[in-house]
Image 1 (cartoon, rainbow, N blue to C red):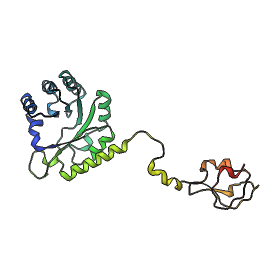
Image 2: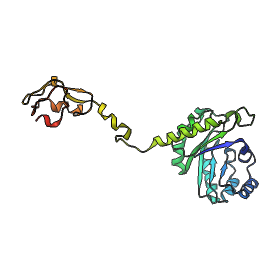
Image 3: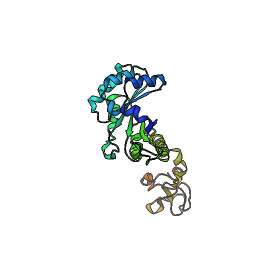
Image 4: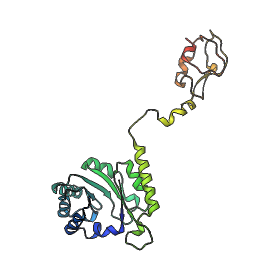
Length: 252
């Protein structure tokens, strides 16, 4: 999931988000609530938002582990059943080096919640990298014009950049998969380009295979190179021409 904040929403989420605002948003049937980092220490507010029964997302900028745990407890005490937290650095913009993305898997293990990233860096690299570390939600500020003069415009994504983030995050997510050492479907046609053992001179039935008879070359239709010592000293059962792939049935 990618959340993009338009500057028209900043007043609600970052400045005057209180119980009255929640009441207003309830009248508007808001589907979920996002608690900004600056409000993450306002435990009564979190409880009130949680009491609506709506899903809740809490950003954790400036909050230490104890404060994050307190915010989570407040949400649970308020009745929240669907809770997510966002690793966040409350710098605007924030340098990528401040993000310490390895915090994300630690948060997942420590708090056991859906965890994402609220990203205030100037490009998409940090956000896309977070996906590989377990981020399930990405939040980015969004504007139609970075030169529009709004308070968030200078560090917000423009439309083409947001589209690139969506594409990059989806690609990163799809590339994760599971631990798998098996041959992949895209590799099947390239197996023939591996090395294997081939006879490099003509041999007659009854001749003994010596080192000058066999080499490891491409393509990969013969025995694997690891078997070359097993082949040495064997006696040919059939005659073969130079360039023939070495097979188990050729010798005994």
